[in-house]
Image (cartoon, rainbow, N blue to C red; front, side, top):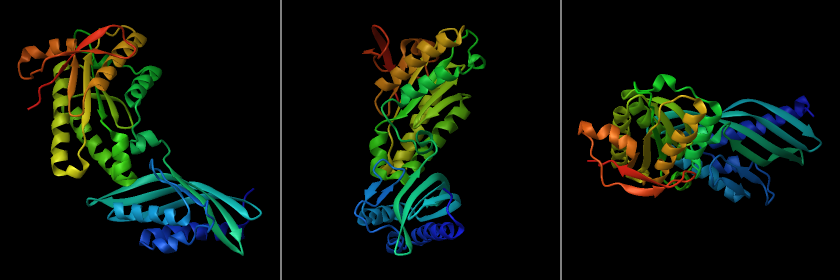
Length: 333
């Protein structure tokens, strides 16, 4: 049931104090607003941000502050309900973080459970989450590439305008190698900042070579091109950009896997979205970090120009596709 005005005001004061004290760096003051119970709980948006007990919660607040140059919360209106000595809230909060001289506003959802003891409300549970975690924070999981391909199939994206004169479409997939481990090591805020830099590098090359961003989930991109050569040059540009970023930020160096395949003439959406998308995503899954791997057909379409060299091919088995398939790494300078 909706809290009465007096209870609502008291709870809003607790939430505001948590935000104010955490934002000002008063870690001990923020921790005092949590209950003293041993099972008091904070669940953050990162993969390792489940904290039980006030000492662990204090450690998490300190970690968030240490990850950034400046950190503050901006509370939106909260919905507050109560039953007796227990209350619960839900609403939005923007976490404003400054890292590397750049300030980002990161929208979160905030839910809390509070209990009133001796006239004072204290937080028993606090949960921060993203509205769509995979897209927003880029938490990677082993099926990111498959998720992109599946989503494209479900949404029946129309790529007719992206075809070459012969009716083929070249598909490019990217994926950060070991992104789950990187997210755990860097922490939520640093990983999000790094992911945004990665996305900027990828999108800059997509724009330069006339690609169409079909879908992105987590740290995986699917891009369509009407030209096989432009797609390949885009892939090379992405790897060069990622390499330059790693040279300047060695503690946050990324390794990106890229795979490309040129699809058969597009006659029916289901046919195209079925085999060609899966084929391209599976090739990407076979690539190592820092490698560009292409199908035999893509190599045929691009090698005659002579400006891109390929290393010796290898035979691979691609999940869900019969037989073995010949794939070729691009020789990078």
